[in-house]
Length: 149
Image (cartoon, rainbow, N blue to C red; front, side):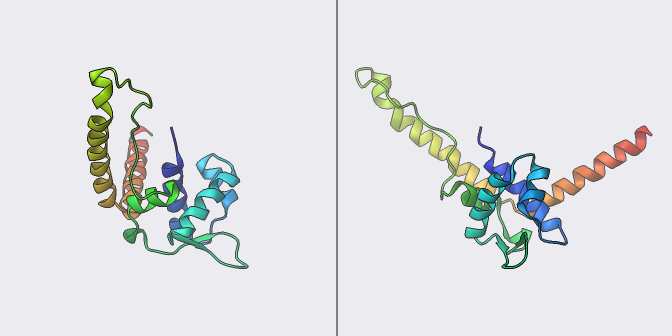
């Protein structure tokens, strides 16, 4: 399974919450991957105008506020596509079979409808929403830890 999307969200939260620019080594350590993978993601995010790197300054800063960045923006940036693509139809169905002959247009239509629903949901969620959920999760976890002490 491809993890570009979740890795990019992780990186963006780090960048947006940091007082100082975050570099690819710092981000990679938190994400649990290598810096070259992070550089590929940050290049795509910068190309989309979500983050920026400045000459003479190591690291990245946000170009937009988290409230202005939808999850769909992030998905599109790191996957370099306009549409969410979750499903593929198998390549060689038999035209000699009635199901094989008709399966591609049937599944293409169903899959595209589902992917459009996902696009709509992602367009309605922002990076700020994700940050808020993370903060709430941390607060809840801290409360639970306080109860068990």
